[in-house]
Image 1 (cartoon, rainbow, N blue to C red):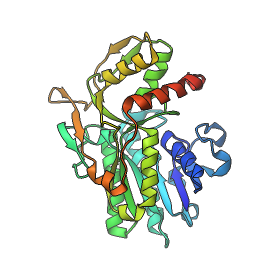
Image 2 (image 1 turned 180 degrees about the vertical axis):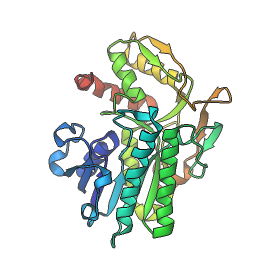
Image 3 (image 1 turned 90 degrees about the vertical axis):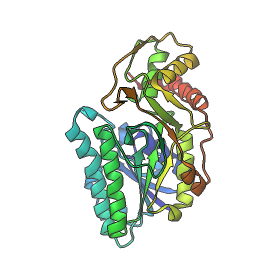
Length: 317
């Protein structure tokens, strides 16, 4: 099977590429990171790496591709990031539209899997999030992820492009970016530096990277049953949902750190009617369809992630 991964040098894309190569798949992919700088890709000599933007993809790139994983995250490098609505909209929506337009014109259309968000799509108090929960974002970033979900499903209905939408929980694990909360917390904890924690009581559902990869392996096996559907790849062994201050304190404990945590203000949209956003999850449909459930507890995943950061702290300033 031939697999194409956009954003292949990123955290999700690189882990997925390394995993699929180990399983014997033929993997190609693109990213805007130079080949020599794509350190997360341990399988570089076993893949076809294209240094190009998803906006530049053409039919030639996707010839005989069976499945494409759209893992490109437009604000990942964050030169402006979520502080610029225009930048966020431009970099999240345009690449998806390009991929869909290319696939639409192909005789043999690859199955397109869009890696959407889970936590960013909703902004209600005490909501139970399932595959059928209407998108209700409270941030520009969340709105763009919801918009691309609908764009993908529109191309499925209007042009018979085979698509699958996957709402991935806040993923963490080895190689994660230093601007993600858990990555930053581990780095600061290991260095015993003072940490400014925004949105301390906001809740997130963290999912360990090995569980996400196991989900995608099941998805490939049962891809035909998933076309046209929205699935959830989120959770941990107990589906433990924690506040930001709880995750900070847990990392302090696991690293035996003296890191001081200063509680900061809330991000726009994380405070609704005077209360921080809170929720629970019901992903029974996705788990039954794929015969998948998370195997790692939050603490088990954190312990492995911390050990990786201890060995690779030199990679992060």
